[in-house]
Amino acid sequence: MAKSSAPSRERIVAGAADMISRRGLNATSIRELAKHAKAPLGSTYHYFPEGKQQLATEAVRYAGTAVERILRKELDAGPAAGLRAFLALWRGIVLDSDYRAGCPVLAVSVEEPPADEIPPALAAAAEAFEGWERLLAESLRAHGADRDRAAGVAALVVAGVEGAIAMCRAKRSMTPLDLVERQLEAVIAGAVGGGG
Image (cartoon, rainbow, N blue to C red; front, side):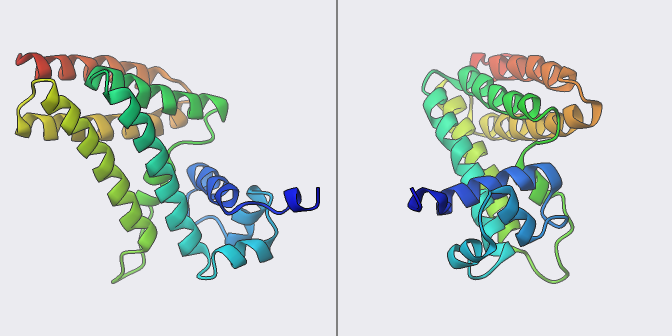
């Protein structure tokens, strides 16, 4: 029983990703990240000896990889299915948190980095976005879109959904995501059908 009280490294990372998705990185201390994950500060520093930036970087990678897993699975059925899964994931997160949580990858991306430095968490966010775009573009190409159009549509999907998530949180309404979904479905249909 005593062993189960020690938080796993993954639980701390998942808790940090959730906290960052709610408050951003700059407004959150490592103490608050540990508390949100229900982890002792000592355990947090044991797993993440470089501190907050190391934990934040791993939290962003964790979120990016979780989304990639969902996309890989759903994109087997085509880009429209991948879009639906991408939207369903974020819709669930936003609604389950009563509009308090969004995407930790986006949260890290919109904060001002220190001068003359690209923090590792920001680099991890760029890698996550690139990974999602790559998977979407590959699926679009496999279903008939040309290379340039596939890359553009993939970037539009990621940017559109991420922006809609922020709008949903601000408006406390899922309407922005619903509107973006309809438009992105039409763009995907046009790209793979050779239309528009």
